[in-house]
Length: 261
Image 1 (cartoon, rainbow, N blue to C red):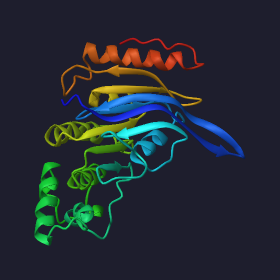
Image 2 (image 1 turned 135 degrees about the horizontal axis):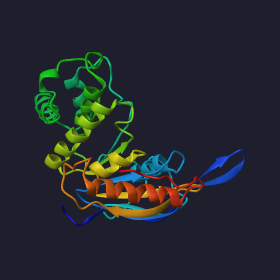
Image 3 (image 1 turned 180 degrees about the vertical axis):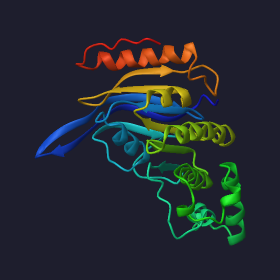
Image 4 (image 1 turned 60 degrees about the vertical axis):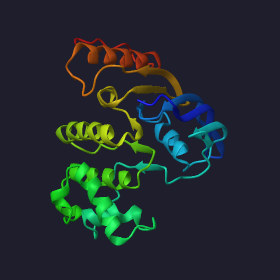
C-alpha cells in the first residue's frame, strides 16, 4: 500500500437549516485516508455519514475546516473522484457495454478506443458475457457490478461508495464484497465506503472511522491489519466486532448488550 495521503480532513464542521434553526450535523471531523486504502465510515443512521461522503466528493459545501484531495482543497466534484450510489443509476435503454462507455463519451477517445476500454472493465467485474445485455436482464448484484465497472472505467483515483450493497440479499452482498476486494486489488483505487454494517466494515476495510451522532463526530479510528479476504467466523474478526460494538454502547443511552460469541 502507498502510504502517501489521498484525503486529509481537518476540523470539519457542517450544519443545515432545520425549521429556521441551524442544526450542527458534523462536528470537528478530522482523519486521513491513504492512497490505496479502503476506509469505511461506520455509524448509525443520522450520524452524518452520507453528508461527510458528499463533502469529500465536492457535492456539499462545508461550514468550516478543510478537505484536501491530493493536497488540493475540495471545492467541487472532480473526474478524479467518482460517487457510487445504492440505486446503481444505470440507463435502462443502454446495454451493459454502452452504460460503461457513458463516462468516456467526452474523453476524446475514438469509438473503438471507448469500446475496448469499457470492455476491459466489464471483464474485470466478470460480466464480459453480459456486455450486450440490458439492465432489466441482470440481477441486482450484476447491475451493481456494471455500476462499479462504469465508475472504474473513468479511472478515478478515488471511489466513494454510499451503502453500495445495502439493498442486496446476504448472499449477493457477500459475493460483491469479495468482488470489490478483487477489483480493488487490481485497480489500486482508493475507496471510501459509507456503511452501518459492522461486519461489512471489518471485512473490507484497512481502516474504520467509527462515528457517533448528535452531532456526527469521529468517535474512534480502528486500523484493521489482518489479511484479506478475512474469516468472518474467526476469533480476530469477532474481537474487532466486540470492540466496535463497545464503541457504539459508549455513545448510546441503551443498556449494555451481552455477547455470546
